[in-house]
Length: 298
Image (cartoon, helix red, strand yellow):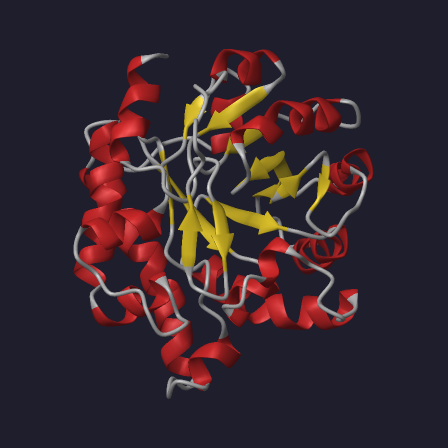
């Protein structure tokens, strides 16, 4: 079956669409080595077959959107490990091609979302959970622009501006997209009713008024933080909302480990949908079995 025949925005106007889960945990489950600071980008460079296999696992579980392995691919980080700009550009485009191949092989329509991770992700020190990097909007835009241009050249269905910890970075990303005609979703990582950088959620979500944004919401956060964030978003926008949290674990950058929740609660996906969520899936530590459960429960 070919990739989805219509724009994702049109589907969101009609129904809820199912996202995939965490790419990194699926790659680890397939026996891949994500050490060394490049995370899933290392597998993209060294074992692209494994990236395609991970996408395929999610498509078979029922995912209708596959998010590419480009989250942590940045020119500076890859240059420090011997990749010139042409090689990094090729990797960014490869990430879209691998997801597209898995989408085309699926037995249902699947969209491809090119992941644009935050500046903090390429630092590999947990900065995406803090924000406030000490950079201005213009500097952040200069960082993101070549990555976005390379990804758009590979023709994804949509860009996933995801795990954004700071409204200033969101402003930078939207500045890069302005006038391009590209379509994207904007997803903050949040905690305790605020962005990771400590900003008001209604103010942060108000940034998403740009016409390039087709949906706005949260990802890579505790499931308990999802509903308050969706309600905050709904107070300032009528755009479709999205939610793809992790399993409630906390990432410790110093040791490179997750600390799992003691007693994880069931996801109240019905409440999320009632609040306006039209894109629902999982992030870190959410694998194909959970996505299959979400698909079966729709």
